[in-house]
Image (cartoon, rainbow, N blue to C red; front, side, top):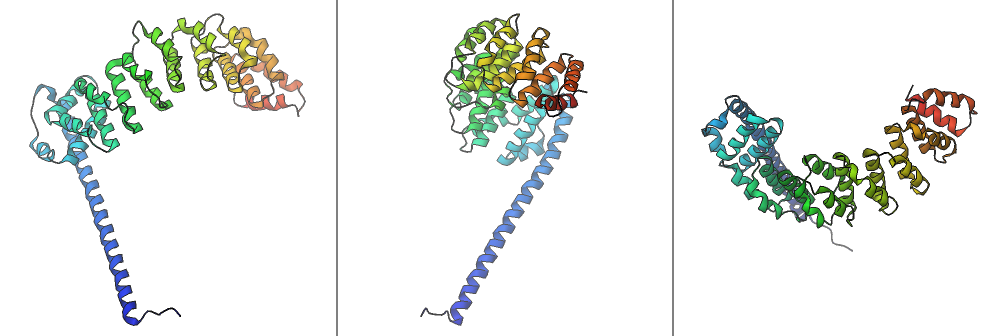
Length: 355
């Protein structure tokens, strides 16, 4: 028979539990107080910095080197310096011209560039990324060498900020890291990079041709987006040649790009490829015909409207035709079809959003 706890042992056990509960409650209260104090500090700092930045911008502080004693004193605290950096980043994004120069001047006179450099050596990825962001937004070009070292950082948020920083400083030429990148570049990151490229160098087409043969699908997709953004019409022939030999993961992007840089024979070539295309590619071709209002391809669309096997595709065909001004034709066709006919149901759905 198992021994039963006596009264003394039971009392000790209860006391231990109560002590643990007390310690847990004390720890929770301490944590809550610390969080509350941190939040209160940030609220107070934000008000202080907002007032200071507005005053500095209005009085064109870039012409002076005056330091606010209260801010200088607060800058002795690392948490404040990092918060200050964050506020300057947000402010710089909202202003241009003289106001932006004022913010950059403040960044330097309070020694926040040194804090940003130190953040690059931190073990926490989000702080490294923040440091890169600060040095980039404040246009500290001298930091490029240090930023470049973080391109292969295991943390995605660090490597992404490094990629963006290099493109920010060097433009299209900063994309040289694409030759060695093995990880997939997210769609969001591709868009960020794309927005940072303002002009293309003369040899850009040669470089883009190399990226179109990359083994990294995301590099190919980014190259296609660049072709589309800068309307590189001379690339049409190359892209048409790649239609049947591209990875299925980039073919839809390829079709979209071809319609964007459309030449005289582009849509004809895409229709010749249509029977061999995947469903998603076919959908892209149909959408593209509607977007460019390819009236010379109406007969093809009319034929596909009745014969295409996929209901979703039929809806896209009807919408493409509607965008070409064919709503009267579609309405007439609908009345000619039996109520249970799939095409009639498709037309009901497509016309509902167009009429």
